[in-house]
View (cartoon, rainbow, N blue to C red):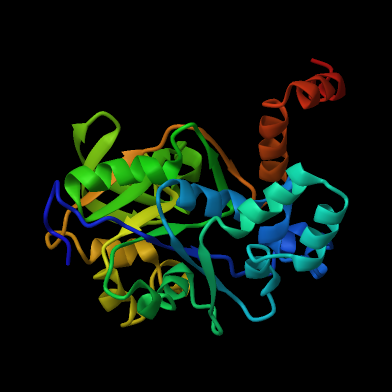
Length: 292
């Protein structure tokens, strides 16, 4: 278990859970797994893999339900497409395809019995092989010059242990979130001494809600393997991290950047508009469409 600070081993592995039926996006998700739905022309899952790769992660396990293999296939070589682009001398597009296939070593793991987010993480125990690891829930797209995962890495390099991404949450939604409490130890950094999954407003230790990004000490697997039932009757990551309190450092980092929950159509639209506004040509189209 990691307890040192300032000399933490580099993290090279990430776990990305993508289970779920994507019912909010039916009928589109009848045949297309939700992680492959695009924010404009880039699938949500690519944002997550790029974020991990940009933080020097080299090996990524995507945890999925059976039948979602096209999600990991996306990061392999598309030989027919590559051959056709080469024949047509579409060099820029060919380079794009080759770059996607070289982002990281991406493997498939299965969650056959969906028992919650913690159970999805548990499927990666052998993959992580005793090492600390990054976890990204890809529905939450976070865009910033310094990625959300890299922001957590900066805290990890200084303090070790586990690091949780957080943002301030409004009172009316705090009961739907995992919430941390603790004391400030730096700009936007909190030393965590309490974690609660989906508390009432009165029980919440703060307004800092967890946001879909973690660096986790490998010791969380010991708790997850016991399959404790938490909020909603599911195996929760928050409970697993809380089991490390007093044993290993836990910090929270208030994340900077644009954030949208693309797990629902409204959040997907927000993300698409944000990305479009970064492109001069598309920005004008957005302005015309919205009457700005």
